[in-house]
Structures are given as structure tokens and as C-alpha cells.
Image (cartoon, rainbow, N blue to C red):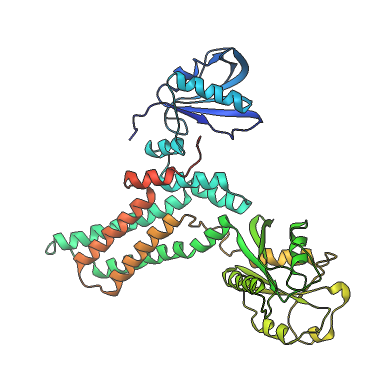
Length: 439
């Protein structure tokens, strides 16, 4: 149902010098207020670009006005967008003039909040707008776009529809036991299907986190095997200090790079060795922790020196998410490494030989078999789905009472409703306050 709101305004582009700045106005008086600061060259018509001038406080500047008549706008209300030259002082003056003529400065996320409240999108789609704006990789952009276009919402609506059918069967069996056939097995099997579908979405939550926060790639190994040199080679510039002295890197250094459309955060860590120096020992502890938290480990060895006991112990620690790499091949590889029978990647971080092949292997290892699937990207979504899955699991572990099954189904339905935004004002306010002003 359409809400009754006042008229708001805000810049929709960053408040800094640029070729063009956009100011958005939304509400019942949007066009009326806009016409007090904008002088059009011709009659203003919906969805047509109108040339004219901004005229305020003795300032005249050429501008373009776009008018979207409700409900055919982003917010579902009358919306006006003013395109002016991107001088921050001019933008502020236009905003001040709009406020003077009856607008209110929009709160963070208020345009999208109005779109949600006016039925232009559900809460899942509204949250995806923020993800769409902040996406740093091609993959993140694609996932956010699909969620904004309603693909995740469709999955949740389908789950809710199936759930409500089960609830009708259950409550019918409770209310009219003598007139309605009890569909007990059908209810149990249906609950299992809903649980499995929710579980599948939950399992993709970790991949959703990686897509938007970046994959963690940790470079680890003994001191002086070339970790910092390799780190710098990946970045394409010198970020870490390179030194011939062991123990130079005492804390971790991290930086983001993009491989195959994915955001990856690479970590250069302290060399793994026994140390009696407290600062270095702390760095080694951090390196071990990052190694455990990583999505991928690049385990680096110095191929120009024969392996010792420390190398052997590190090789024994190789996990499925590790890529063992022999560095310094420009100096030659000792035969002992070849005799180990391991599938090492061979590179020279100094000359760059083998680096492109290693990058391809990293991208391949971190590619998902679920490329075309939709992912859970918000902790709010994940928490609600986990609550729903836990409730269904509990109900299925102790079946036999139709009233308890019906209560579990109602609980899960409430969680799906909250996910879609059929929920309380407090939750809605908390979500939209994290948006940027102008959106």
C-alpha cells in the first residue's frame, strides 16, 4: 500500500568535483518544488529530458531535468532528478534552495526505503541495492544484480508457498479430524523438502561472504623463501619490504587484487620458524591464525636450497586448500625437490617466470561449481534461515503431534516473512540507516 510522505531531496552522486552531479527529489511536491529552482525551456513531460537553467541566489547554470510520475519511478512517488555541473558548492546551494522551498533533506537510504514501503521492491531486493553500489568485483556485481532483480526473493517466495500448503494440510487435519484425511506422511516429506532447500541456501552463505568480502589468500613459508617478493609481484608494485635478513616481516601485510573477476585479499605473513624474539613470535602466531582462516594457502619453498627438516614438516602440513610452490627457479632447482614426487608450481618471484600460470591456478582453485547459483550475502538472511532450519530439524526429530508440527510451520513462516520484509518497523529502520544518503 502506498504511504503518504513529505517531499525529500539529496545528492545522488558523490559530493566532490565532477562533470555532472545529480540531485534527486521524491514526494508529492517534487515537481512543484523543482520548478522553483529550475527554469525549463519547454513544457515538462514525464520521462523526457528537459533542458533549462538552475536559477538561485544570482547564479544561473545550464541543467537538465528528468521527471518520473508516480508510480513509474524508483520510489513509486513523483520523482525529479536534476543534472547540474558537479561543483560541490553549487550542489549545496541547490539543495539549500530546495529545502527553503519545502523539501526535507533525505535520511540515509530513505529513497530505497520509500521504494520498499511503496511496494516497488521487497526487503531482500532493497538490501541488494546497497550491495550493488558497493560491489568491487565483476562477480559481486553480477550476484548483487541478480538479487536486486528478484531471483533470491523468488526462491524464498517459492519456499513460503510450499510451507503454507503444508500448514493448510496440517491445520485442516487438526480442525476437521473426522472430515479431512490426515496427510501425515505428506506433511513430513514436505517439511523435509523445505528444510533441505533452506539448508542448501545456508551452505552457500560462506561463498556469498567470499564474493563480497574477498577470498583470503595467505602466502606462508619459512623465512627468506621470497614471500614478500612474491606478494609484491602479485600486486605489481612494491608493497612489502624485501630483505635478505630472516624475520624482516614481523606482522602481516595485506592488499586486494582481482583475478578472473573475483576480489582476492592477499596476505604476506611472517616466516614460520622457532623464535625467541617476542615481536617476531607474535607475528608467527598471527601467520598461523591467518593460515587457518584462509580460503587458499600458497606454501612457498626455496627451490634453490635443498629441503631441510622444517621444509619436510611444512610439506606434511599441506592441505586440500594449499598450493605448494617452489620459488627461486632462476637459481636452479635442487634435485632433492624433484625426488619428492610432489606437484610443485615452479616460479621465480624475482623474474616473474611462472607467475601467470600460478595466478591461473589460484583463480581455478577459487572458482565455484555454483557459478550460476544465487547466494546468501547478508548475515541477517543467514541468521533467519538458520533459525528456520533449526526449527524444522527439531520438529522432524520428534514428529507425532500435529499441533506441534503446525506451530513449527508457523514459526518458519514468520522467519521467511521477516526475510522478505513482512516485518516490524524496527527491523526496517535498522537496515536502511546503513545506506548512503541519496539512495
